[in-house]
Image (cartoon, rainbow, N blue to C red):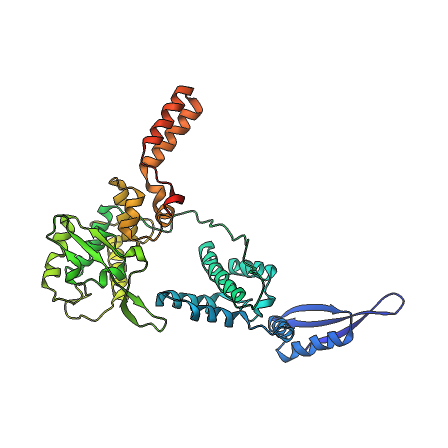
Length: 401
């Protein structure tokens, strides 16, 4: 139970009133100049079970007429236009799982210190720099919404220094063709066309499961598949076919002869308007994302445990890593990042560069050569090196984006 202690100086004069209480077993203290303020804080603590955060929130709300930030963030989501249901679901997950410390604060009372405490709390809870940045981006947008609505005058997220990503390894797993073949050896024949298509096209899983026969041009001079739709999940867990992830995800992807051969029978045996890729021959229930993920996971496990042809790979690849591996093979074959961005359906080439730029061999070779010339070469060699770089197909990422 909270109590108020009178503090006096050496002359016996009362100088302050200190409130002492225990929050989750830890002793807390706060001093006040006026007795009525100390008593108010004591009563407030007792009303909320001596939960310091709840007491602070209640005190702030008493002095503020603004809605709490959780309400503002939900209102921001409701005002969004042309946003995929999965994105809405993800944003609501941010509010539910990552808003501790700021959710119940009045939106006009949240300042820089609150956000710094929030970032430190996220780090303490083991959240990655990428997760913190993603949630912070949503908080920033919700705060902009609050400013537009006149609920506060500024955005406290502006200028925020977010933690750096200190991961020591790539999050993506890049498999070789031999490694993917080892895994495919443990996939049943009915499911194989799906994985052959993912390997040969780099499609997203949701794009592949939404394909119908009309999307394919297998006998054209350049065989291809047209991406115009994708399976999506709404905020209630229901799946439906909607537009692709981005405007540039609406694209045509050229197919190699081996990929055409792998999927031709399935395309030609599927009736018009029906989806060509189901998890089993006996069912046409869609979508089946979780089943596909499970079957890939199982195939990887069997391949790693196989004594005959054991898969040697440091980390277990996800089904999405097939897309990353496809991209790495395209780069190794000479495709530049601009072409790759179009093939993968990236909205911005910056995304492509951040994910795959380190795989571009010519860029690394040119950089190494330029460093060698700069360190050890003669002036005329420097000019020659500059000419080599000028003649290369270099993309100005900022300009293209």
